[in-house]
Length: 166
Image 1 (cartoon, rainbow, N blue to C red):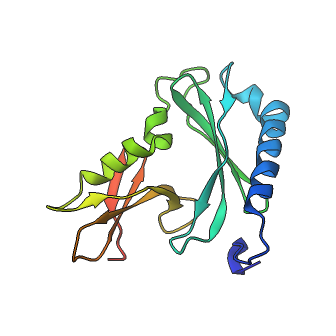
Image 2: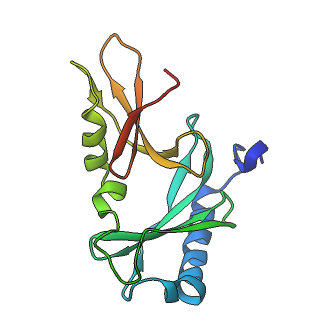
């Protein structure tokens, strides 16, 4: 395993760990987290969180109710619990939780990034990543134009900004 908890070796079985994360998420939700969330919450599939160089940094498991994301479970690359974030500001009130599209609809996320595009640039495929620290989740979206270097845009919920590393 590489420094910082990232796995970079050829023997790393991402699909196997994704299955482990899914099982751990179901247990975590049923045994510990479920009582603090609105009734009827469900888990979405685990999404890999990758560093800018493509290495797996961890897993993001959205907890949803209706068309809102109410929480997320975070795991290390090998499936150990990393943390839980709640988006509910008041118990049982979903209106203040982010819409699913802001976090799970890649076309919606790419369109948000495109809003910072310059003439001739087009948004590429979003990758769930982070801005600075792995605790600051954001979608990393390339803006590409022929003959120009790729510009990286971050989208986190309804916030959109250009990478400071350009």
